[in-house]
Image (tube, rainbow, N blue to C red; front, side, top):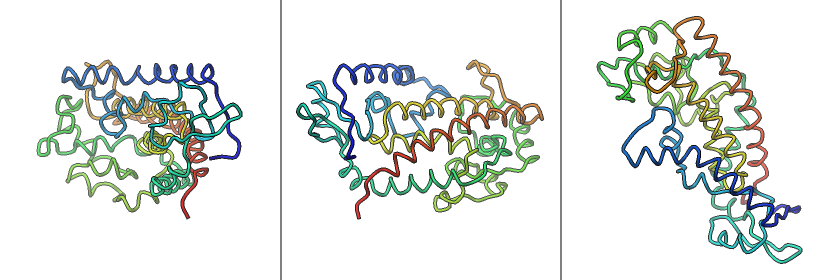
Length: 297
């Protein structure tokens, strides 16, 4: 545990816990309700289906490393993973178990440090225009489309024409791996899991959405307010990503960003830069948490 600990009384930490749960449930409860009815949403389901953290896990509040929760109300955390009893001036409290976490999650911590630190050091590519989603729908008449319940805004032939008339510059493996077979050789790079640490760059929408992934993978060391900041950034990025995609989202209340036009490209880059600025701040906070974690020798 850190040498200096902040001890919170129940009157201090319980309102924080309640506020976090309310904040998280605003996103999670509609997803759960849709799932119970067998319904899908092309934007709002993504963070709960693509990423591995489920709504119930998101609702659980953690103060982060260096904070101890006092009072009988914290007792349930004795059974929570990576919590331990910590002596305080008035008795004991429950706080983050840094040693156990470092032992159990050493590989994840090291990889998070590599990805987060490496991304900071590279220039951003603001000329991709979200064409990864178009490459995933390329030659749809042969391959079908991932979102089978959404129409293509320009149709199959129009979508193919956009792909063929642009340079595809995706650097993110977890987007590239969903390309159709015909689109794969059209990408200027051929990202792999092994080269991810060398290619991640701070303009990439998917790399910036993935800050949410690193935040929950480093939980409970990461305070839940930071997790939610990353979640909400990913939510906003996903919305823009799908607006710029080849799909028609008019029935879902979203106008397209027409990246096949100069005006659409300019709008895309403007929003992409705003997201990159938000991500820079969150990435620095996550890296600070990751670098402070104790790893086994």
